[in-house]
Structure formats: C-alpha cells, structure tokens
Amino acid sequence: MSENSKKTRDDAETSFRKIQTPSPKDRPILSEEDQLIQARNVKTARLRELRLDKEANATNAKLSVKPQS
Image 1 (cartoon, one colour):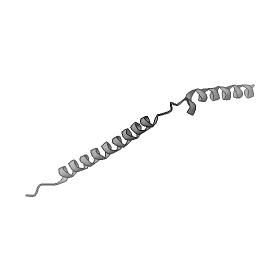
Image 2: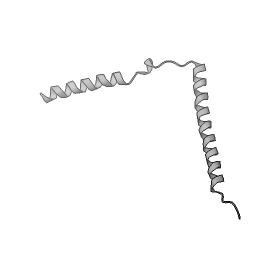
Image 3: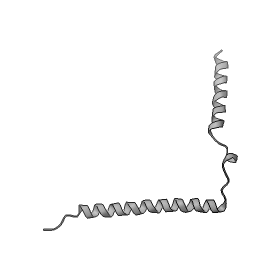
Image 4: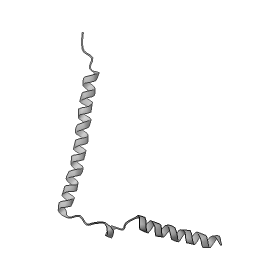
C-alpha cells in the first residue's frame, strides 16, 4: 500500500514541477533590439547604484569631518 502511495505522490510532484517550471520553448524569444534595451537597462541600474553609493560616501565624509577651532 505504501509503495502505491509513494508512486502516486512522486507522479503528483513530477506533474507539479512541470507546471511550475516553464520550459525554454515557452519563454519568449527576445529580438536583438530587446536584448540591447535589456542590457542597457541593466547597465544603467548598475551605474545608478554606483553613483548613489559614491554620493552617500561623499555625504558621510562631509558629516564626519569635524570643523577646526
């Protein structure tokens, strides 16, 4: 009896995984233009993050400098 329920459970889990993970053929094929746009957006986000970090470090450096008396 437990063998039968194990097989049923395994079959159910396999079916669930097939539904949850789309196959590569189901993913849309990006055109060359879409790939360039996506790459540009990733680069822009990375550069924005670097700029914000730099500005935050500059602000922290200004705040940490004590005025001389």
